Image 1 (spheres, one colour):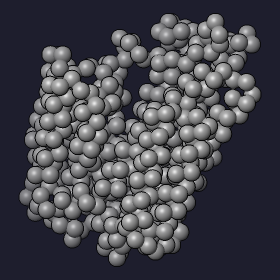
Image 2 (cartoon, helix red, strand yellow):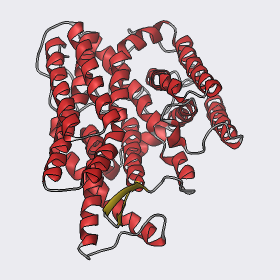
Image 3 (spheres, helix red, strand yellow):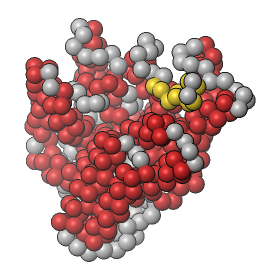
Image 4 (cartoon, one colour):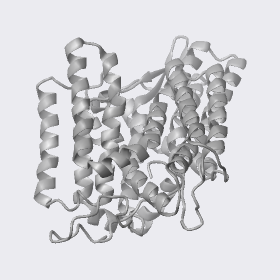
Length: 454
């Protein structure tokens, strides 16, 4: 959404140990300035995702034409890399961090939970509708121009895969007011309940061999990580002794290493997202504690001019960058294949030396293409929701319609037909939001930016 992330009241570091414990109710004082360190973390994490996607997508030439493939599938070099590039837990932590501040500020201005959810979903869904519509149109044009239907199907499935994040994050943000209300009553008990439920799902999945049971952790794992963001925003983690935070972070990593070493979990941390496992809770806990320990250095680093400029750009275009990364990668793959077929280049297969040699240029070009798309189209996600009045039922209907649209694309892949249906559902959802959301008063909130993990 458009509410800024914020710094603790003491930006130079954690409060002294003698400081009074923070209030836990919604009457707790809210910090007044942006947390540029958190903004920098989000920007670096988004860059990590662009690199990860760039390494995954590969195109080669077969006897019948271009072939899209996963360069990372079965690659021995990939699992160790995921220990650096698995940053999805951080996104949900930062989403909880920003959501707590945004919601409490909204209530302080006389806003409602309904208006908060309406604004969050509006700013997630609008750029998604545009992107899905554009991809569906391009796929239809390619089919009409005679492109192989099998190749178009591969492109559509590849494009649809990252949209899981849109659906899960949207659902978590829609549930944030209710989760925050429970957090204010019993913060540690709620976190323990979510973590215990996540462990229980993993145990039951392992005992029965039914992988489908693991999808219950789409709620338990990601909501637990979102709540870690509440703790970070309230300063609870910063108030813990450094030794306690350090020990807890080391213990989380040690538990993860032990589970991998014994064969209980895969060393590929990306594989733990489908469905989510409690490994992500350990990853997210370690990452959150590290952020807490490095708050002051992160702030100092984030105000350097070049990094500050990068962070501002990503902050203002983040949802667009995420949504357009795969289309830009697929465009680059298509152009590369076309040039190779015309004899103007080669497409080395992974993991050959030639493939590794071309990866730096490939990553730079695709990141720049994605940034260009963000710069050109980022204004869409900054559009404010018009003043509206209505009921919470309208917002609930909008959330459900949006989730159905995303689920359709995930299950069936992006095709001209599924894209058109998803766009239609998304537009109806946007109309429901505009009919059901009491827009937050933005007149008192300067420097507003689009909401993506804010």
